[in-house]
Length: 412
Image 1 (cartoon, helix red, strand yellow):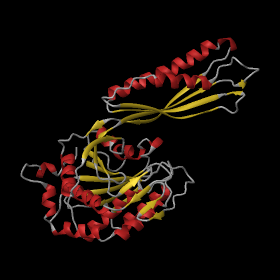
Image 2 (tube, rainbow, N blue to C red):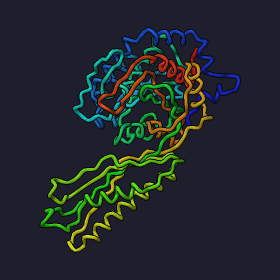
Image 3 (cartoon, one colour):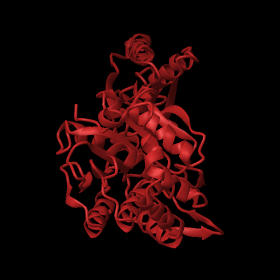
Image 4 (cartoon, rainbow, N blue to C red):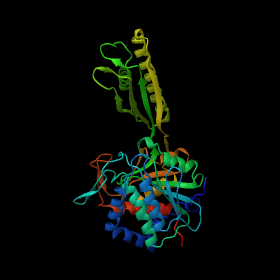
C-alpha cells in the first residue's frame, strides 16, 4: 500500500485541516472560489452541453484532456478504456491522492443536453449528475493554480468512464487494475453531483442481470399450447415479488425493464427482463441472487412442463450485466476523519452514508475512498427535467480543496 501522509501527521494534537485554515494561500484560494461564479457557471454549462451517453464519453473526454493540459497538469493522457488522467505534481510523488468525477450520464445518444436558464437555475439532463462533479475538478485546479499552492504529495485528477448503469464502473475498475495508477493510490476522492449533506464511505453492493427466454413463437390461436417466453417472465416477476427482503441489512430488488412480443395475437418468440439487486451485505446479496436464479430456472421448468405437449421447450439466457462490490472505508480511517473535519470547517454537518459510486472499487480493494457532493442545490437527477442551482457551490468547492490538501499535505 502506498505511504500515506497521515503516517506522518496523524497525532491527536495535529489536525491537518485546522492547520490548513491558517495558511494565507488557502485564504487566496477561498477568495478565488468566492469571486469566480461566472467563470464556474460557464465551465459547468460547457461540460454539460458535450454529450456523454453510456459507452460514448469520448467527446467529453477529449475536452477534459485539453483542459487538463491548458491548466498545467503533467502527463495528461487518455487510457485504453477512456479515462482521462492528469497529474498535479507535489514535492514528492508519494502519496498519490486521486480526485475523480465520472464523465458519463444516464441519457441515451440524441438527448438534448443544451442548458437553459430559469432564474438562477441551470436546467438540462446531466447538469447535476455529473456535470457538477466534473466542473468541480476544473475549479479545484484553477484555485490551486491561482493561489500558487504546492502540495507535498501528488494529486491525480481523473475523469472516469462507465460509472452509470451498464457501464459497471469499468473506468475505475481499469484505473485500479491495469492503468498507470494501479498499486500507487493512497486514497481516492470522488466528486459525484451537488449537495453537501453526505460523505459516502460505505459501498452499496449490487448485481444486475438480464434474463432472456426464447421459444418458437407462433399464432395465438393456431399454435396455442406452445411455450410462451412472456409467461415465463411473468412467473419470475411473481416469484421475485414474493421475496421477503430484509430491512436490515437493507436489501432491495427491482425489475426495471421488460421487453418482448410483436403483437397481441402472436405468441412471442422471445422476452427479456433486467433485474437490479442491491444490499448493504454481501451475504444478503448472495441470498437474493440465489433466489433470482432459482426463480428463473423454476419459471422455465414450469412453462416447459405445463406445455410439454407442444414438443417445444424454452431456452433461457442469464447474463450478469453489472457487479458492484460492497464494503466500507471505516469511520476511523484518516480519510473519513479528514472528510468530516473539512466538512465541519465549512459549517457542514455531514452524515456518513452508503451508496453505489466509483468509490466501490477502491473500497473493495482496501484503498481508502469516499464520495462527496460539490455544493449547490439540485433536483430531478436522471430525469430530463434535471436542474442545478449554484447557490452555496463555493462551500462545496472549499470542502473539496481542504480534504484534498489534508490528504496530500501543503508544501512550504
